[in-house]
Length: 289
Image 1 (tube, rainbow, N blue to C red):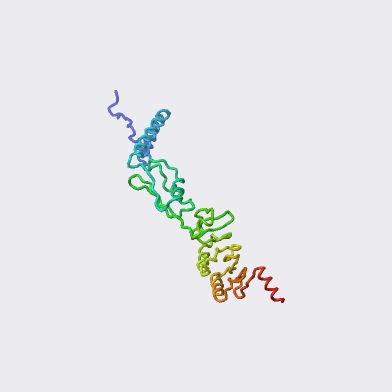
Image 2: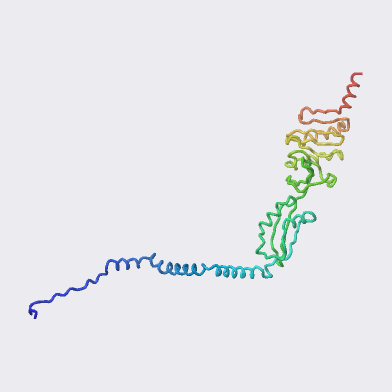
């Protein structure tokens, strides 16, 4: 029996959480941890399941085959098939050269055609200035070509070639007679100065059919070549006025009609005329008599 005046003391439990429980509660309140539980754990479980499933080679092959079949079923639909090729702006040999540069087999899916690559392959051809490649409705691979227009025949160490106004190579030539309507230019570096050469040839047209062409000398200046092996040597600077001066002398005194081998205009203040050896010898004999 306890004494009546004795109060029994009981120990109450501490309501505060333990240290580890408190830390876990604080961690659960962290946004990053909650995001990891909500998204990271499902992702890891899914990744693990997918890794286990794809570990089998047969399953991987089946999935790859299914994807390839689905892609082929879309790419090979009739509306995506290219059936033929059309070329505008090029004819004859140039059109045949373009077709030979693109050995395509039709019909072919438009997804298998790399249009930028085809365009660059066409523009690499010497006779093509620009090209545009696109697929038109109806399964037509349309190629619109701007060809290079030859304006002169260039004679160089490798033979004869056609060049355009920019001096770009258009095609090779077997003989000068194949293009009699085009003027002839010659010499190393002549193709880099085609506009100037054409200007000189237009001015030299006043001499009629005697003009054979122009030759680039030392990659610095021009010589106008006439028949009978006559030459008009022009200066590096302002060759056109010098040529016009010779044409004026020809009209006034018929200088080029005489037995002259060369008219040297390189020194504009003192033109020089060189006679042929036979004419020079005859002149000395007449002088000594």
